[in-house]
Amino acid sequence: MSRPLQGITVVSLEQAIAAPFCTRQLADLGARVIKIERPGGGDFARAYDTRVRGQSSHFVWTNRSKESLTLDLKHEAAGALLRKLLAGADVLVQNLAPGAAARLGLDYASLSGDFPRLIVCDISGYGADGPYRDKKAYDLLVQSESGFVSVTGTPEEGVKAGASVADIAAGMYAYSNILAALLERGQTGRGKRIDISMLEATVEWMGFPLYYAFDGAAPPPRAGAAHATIYPYGPFPTGDGKTVMVGLQNEREWAAFCATVLQDPDLASHPDYADNSRRSANRDTLRARIVAVFSALDADQVIARLEAARIANARVNTMADVWAHPQLAARGRWREVETPAGAVPALLPPGATEARMDPVPAVGQQTDAILAELGCTPEDIRALHAAGAL
Image 1 (cartoon, rainbow, N blue to C red):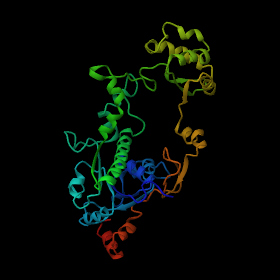
Image 2: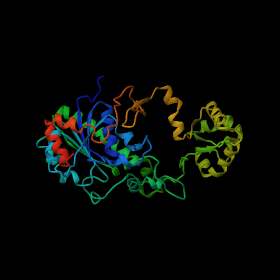
Image 3: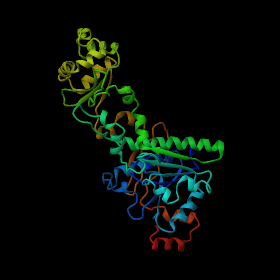
Image 4: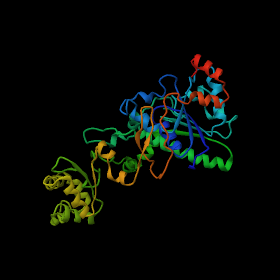
């Protein structure tokens, strides 16, 4: 079937999560993504864990629908092979160590003269200039530098997010900027450089706490899984040992919560809880009242009362619960993707009714085929293998 990026070729010097997550989105839309990997072990994210039939959970998630070409970028033959590859490419994505692409002659300034239509997207921790430009950056470190950890967790301790939010943010901004650059190239005929910083991507996501703390004001307090400033808005235990997330937004909902869920309509006008500011200030005593009611009910009964009152709610699901989530099943959001160790389920990309969901490649699986496309003879390819270039 025809897909939006069919005919677009992306070459990616990628590792870890940010760049692979970006290029997987491009592959989902039909782009041909050629992933350059180290000979032998390949992308080091392949070895993060062995949770998916002996394969890395991170790698399986971010690398479907790609072709793997192994190439030692420091080998004397690598530069000529890459330039042959880039001659037919539309986009180059790289998240190598700071300065590595420039030293290899793979920065936009070095390439744009010969490849004026090439879009070059650089993904780094802190950007190409400034005092942090050479600083190593990993997801946890950028979550810390961006202030994310300072507003996440409990009053006693800041914590990181359970998912790689800094990597994901950078990958998604790289993806959207590449799509915009392709549209711009359609008008100008020229490529461009895109400079994506994990720090800037994550700080953009920090807009609410930044403005909440504007002009020296106190930041939002860490409140665990509860909302920092709205109450009741957060997790509450139920009598069967489960947890239900409750989210109230206004006074109408507060009155309905008291009448239908707590079955105590007079509580709505109690002077300690008559508006959100007072409920938030007195959250400890209010929580005790709510927990006392919920402890006599199981999670299904609590959710039934919340639904009857039209109060937003959610179950605090485990990963096993999400795999079996009835809403995802009802909407047909699961597909199967092949991997070197067999088929695994994969979520259809959000917004898509169909998408390219081809196999996750083994290290170097397409190396010889890609080199043959570039005009290398079987003898050439054998010689490159023997020389350790591939």
